[in-house]
Each structure stands twice: as structure tokens, then as C-alpha cells.
Length: 419
Picture (cartoon, rainbow, N blue to C red):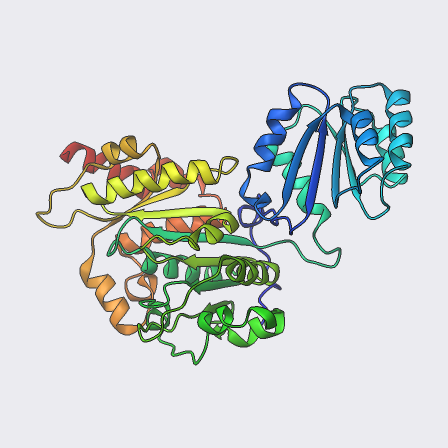
């Protein structure tokens, strides 16, 4: 059941770089400013499965090294020389380089004729300094995608700062809007094996789902994955959790990576619904994620946990944009609340969306197995969730609506006055 025929919006496609497979990567730098950039590349989440070694000395050092050692799957060499010197060094490298090795050359000459010559001679790519980590990662990623593959889909992960903040409901509503309002093929992967609610929220009772995928590592492929997906609507599929505590499953990072790779390869968007407890296997999901969404409530415990998550993400995802922050259940009666501006300042993130407390609408939606925009399409909660889905989809706000101000902006102003 493949939804790849739906065309993702520009924002959905942006920065959707495929993680590298389990390969060896050797990098030979020459200019002193290049090594720090390459170290940032090596530390990126999309390189987590690759083995990366960084050397100095440029192409001459590589020639000397590979005279005695087989070349890796991917070899990156830098040269500061002019055209003739670069070509001479590459000629020497060709004598010791395996034909199966992909070679990327990093140079300091912005010369289109040289680029065409190198490509015609079998060089995989020619990049010109200065470069940032994202540009280099894009080059690496493109080399290891199948030539027949469609554009890689994006992985969006929703994580609650603590239990009860509504992260799952918001994830499901955003996925529903992406699939319906924005006609984007979307899969929800419910990773809360014991207490997942995606099946309930969409009023379906799948016979199988994520549990069978996790138990079938040796048989996992696109055909099996299609069998495990449940159709919720024309463009929305669900990889459901069993929602039961009668079976304890030890999730393996490698198996989860395979599952997310398969979903990414055949669907424009995969929405990962994470449990609120932290476990080691979650690192695999975070590494595969293109956009993180943290859902919090305006309470001290939620603020503390959000700050911890944000600080952790900075170390795990140094080359990515910061997470999107959703502040849910605002204005809950007489409950003391941390003002949004103070919450944002404390965690070091701008607030992407504020969703007001609306127990009746949310309760009715959950009870009916419907989404918020279905139950109360004109409610402030539906508008806020719609704004979040639009932000993720990349659709621009019409100019007249920009002038009138967003729901987030009006709520921030209103709540800041109260605080």
C-alpha cells in the first residue's frame, strides 16, 4: 500500500537527506579550515551507521596510504592546487584506488570546465570550498540513493515533554491534515507499544502493525511493510501499536532503523509518535528524524523536561534546525501556568504553536475516533493545529492573514499580559 504518488510540498522535501548505509568513509584534508567542517559531518546523525576516518595531507597522503591499504567505499580528498597539479595528483591516486570506490574531490577552484572533466573521468562529485556540513552531507547522501528511487520522504517525530501533554493527539491530527488538506501521502508509526492510541484515534482495529515489523528483522522489505500498514484514508496509513502490556518487546535500534528506512523510501511523510518514557532505542528514531516536534504544557515539570530534551537534541543533531515547540493546554481554568514568553526563554526555543485548552472538543474527538478539525472545525484548537500542519507542509500564509496576525501571536500577547 504505497502512498508515494502524492507529491510532498517544498518544505516536506527540504533537507530530507537519506542516512548513509554501513560504509567506510575516509577523508583526506589539506587546508586547515577543512578538518573542522569534516568533523561536524562525521558527527551528524545521518553518518551514525558509517565508519569515518579523517586524515591530513590531501591527495599525496592518500596515494601513500593506499599503496599498502585497500580504499574504502567512499573516499573524499581535498586539493588546494591549481588545475594541472590537481589532475596530476588524481592520476597518481587512480593507480592505487579500487574501481568500486566512490571518490569526491574538494577543491578551491570554481571552474565548470574542470568539474565536467572530473565527472567525465569517473569522479563522483567535485565540491568547491568554502562548504558547510549540510552541503557535504547532501553530496554523500545523493551517492548512495538508488538511481531508480524517488525523492526521499521526510520523518517527523512528535515527542511529549511528559505524559498527558497531548503529543499523540496532536501528531495524529497533523498527520491527518497533511494527508487530507495538503494531499501528502503520510504514514503514522506508533512506537508506544504498550499504550499507543493511534488505532483508537482513527477508529480502526488493525490485526498487525509495528510489533510484527519489529519481530521480522530478517524478512523486512517493502512488500511486508505494505502488508502491515492499515489504511485510514486515501493518503493516510497507520503502522499501529498493539496497545497492550501483555508482551514486553526489546526494540533493537538496527531493526527500527530498517523500518524507518522502508517507510521513508516509499512515503512522502512518516509521522513518528514516540512514547513519553526515554529508552536507548529512541536514539535510532531521533537520528532518522528530519523535524522534531516537542509538545509541552505550561508547567514546571514540562519546562524542565523540555529543556533537557532541547539540550540533548543539540548534541545529537548539531547540523539540524532546532525542534518545533508546541505549547498545549493553555488557559486551563484556575491552574497556575508559566507564561509562554518565559517558557520559551527558559528552554531557548521559539514557540511554534500555542493550543488552547478545550476539554470538550478534545474529549469528543477521542471518544468518536475523529480529528479535532472534524469535530469543531472553527474552534481555536483546530485553527492552532491547522497552523502547525501548514507550517510543516510549507504552504505560505496569504498576505491578508499575515496582516491580521497569527493565532500564536495573538495568544502570546494575550497571555503575556496575564503573566
